[in-house]
Image 1 (cartoon, rainbow, N blue to C red):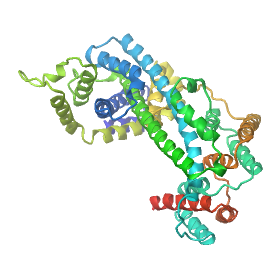
Image 2 (cartoon, rainbow, N blue to C red):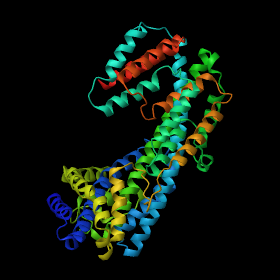
Image 3 (cartoon, one colour):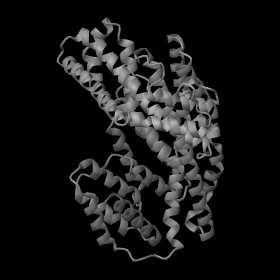
Image 4 (cartoon, rainbow, N blue to C red):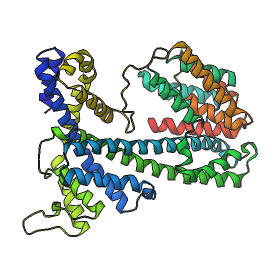
Length: 483
């Protein structure tokens, strides 16, 4: 398959036999997507069943309605041979299920980012109540930190190192300078697609505890009381007992949020794969459901629904009966797909690399051949295999570009929101929000010397020894982990 798609793409890019090869390209790319989705679904569905059946994730009940509907769609697709119209309807329903998962994940992300801010604060008061070991003095530490930041020739890694340092160093930046950096960060998006700016604004607002939507009043409201308690604490004068109580509350709630996030991430992946299987159904070769991927998917779904399946009739006169036997037999099927996922992904990359170019350069021929809808589907599938589990699948026909006025208005609005957030808040909370968002902005230094000056200034201007010690410890831990 890889050589076939490679040859097809090569000839299309040379503008050879376009009318003959475009349908072949679509067919091969659809088949690659279908097979890749089935192999991934096979593996992830097996793991998902283990998680659910063993009670590993305590939040599975919160996703019961979504999971139950997914099981029914899997049953319909793999056991009942639905019509083309029914399969298309299932694809649309899966998109709705996916949006429900996305809505929940946005709420989870907002809560996680709020806990991160409060964890930042508590980390910096921790050493008021613990003995301090000897760490390098400021100038030596600054020198070593800068040396580490620039220990690579890769600019991406250098910028990542700078952002990490900005997020952990004592925050002593003035609000005026901070607001100026917000404006500069947004100005970078002038001339870019508006969706890129929207993505930055969403990310900034979640990290600054500014993000709000109606779903926060519906999903996971059990975290609200804890966040309200954390917001009301006097961090400047916190005592050891109060610190220990809330450090533990953050740990417990962070663990819960991690469980929820893992659950919905798995569900999102499964929904994506089933969507892919639905929209590529016409291109999949008929195998009577006996290939390894289909056997495992059908078997796991039979266990979820507690319904009988022909899958368990493994040989004439021999039938699997217990759950243990069934899972063991399903596990044996994975041997047959070793190395298959990597080969399929290689083919997907080849086909995907040409998709955007072909969509633009051969737009008229695609329309003439009646393949416009297929290319729209392929663009969605490309996003599902190359981006986030929760990538936005809605195609922007003629996406709006960010104008100077739009950038200025967005910056003014965001700065106004930050000012309102900071009003009446403790100095420690303001600094936590600034640090948490500063490391998400484009790097604003223009030379290594500017970085060195900032590091030294941040350390020398911090007269809170517990905060400075915590910053150094966190930086040492982060950088030693990367070594």
